[in-house]
Image (cartoon, rainbow, N blue to C red; front, side, top):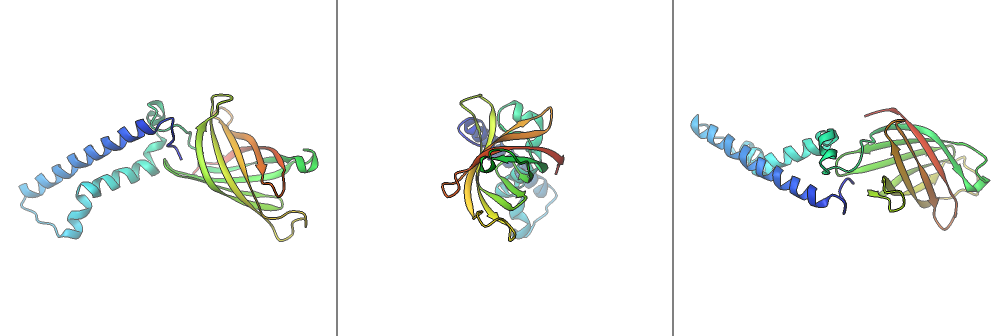
Length: 201
């Protein structure tokens, strides 16, 4: 998510502004309807009420407007737009980092949610808990997520379903994600990942 301890106050203020704008819009529509003596049935009137106006405004922001640079500049949004399909490689301690494993990440992101689907030579994965945060080590915004990985039917017998964690940092100049991962206690492997975006949603 784009909301955490680094920006939750600013995001809260933004929500309050959206509510205020929704009240203004709802009042303006109500005045216009009365002026022209238009009476709407409840199933039409409800969506243009304050709650309806807010829901529409927030949905548009959550899916589209959050990508505008102004929201990141003022601190309401802390992360870059990572939507798209990413291809690259993974290296693992399993084989002492000798082999480049093909990696594909499909990232779906809104202002309040992000989901990462991974596909590799012998397995596939999906994120189960995701968040953006500022790394205390390098002071950069990074994507942190836990994942569940399942082997393909023709994977080696030593591979089993497992969980792990990943940290990825975005480079805007090269449009790449680089980082590291750790697979759970049943495998105890760690490695690196590097992918480049080939298609943006």
